[in-house]
Length: 185
Image (tube, rainbow, N blue to C red; front, side, top):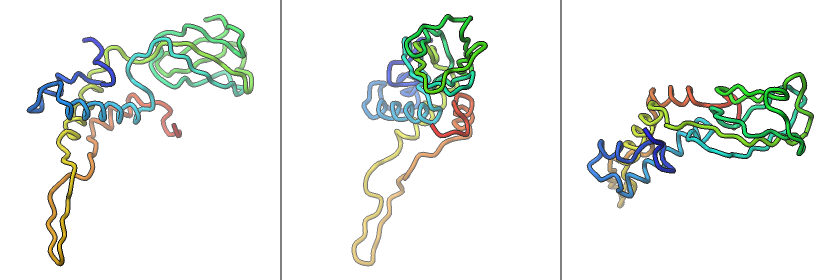
C-alpha cells in the first residue's frame, strides 16, 4: 500500500467507506486532516516518511543524542560544528529508538550536531491508519453550532457533542509510536 496523500495518515477513500459522502468531500478531508494532526501531535513526530530532513541537535557531554522522530530510515550525514563524522567509526544509530550514539567519545558540550536523515513510515502502519480513521469518523459527526438557546426562564439544549474523546485502541497506538515518553515535547 502506498503512502496516503499529505497531510493525511490514512486514505480518504478508506474513511469514505464509513461515511455517506465521497472521498473528496471537504468535511471528510478536514476531519481526516484534523485526526492525522492530532495523532502526529500525540506521538510527537510526523509519523509519515520524511526524506532529507535536517535536524540540529546540541552536544551535552554524553555519548547519546535523541533524534526527534522514528524510525530512522537512513543517516545521510552527521557534522559537529561543521566537521563531518564518519558513519560506523564516529557514530552509530539505533533505528527504532532514534538514538544517535558517539562511538568512544561524547558529543561536545554546546556543539552543533547537524544530522541529515530520513525517518518515518512508508507505508503508514495499519494500526495508525485504523485509529486515525476512527477518530476522523468521530470528528466528522460533530455538529458545530448553537447548543443552548435561552429566553427568559425557558432553555432548550440540543444534544451536540462538545469534544471528541479517544478510544483504548487510540491510546494503545499512541503509546506504541510515541517518542520521549514521560518528557515534555
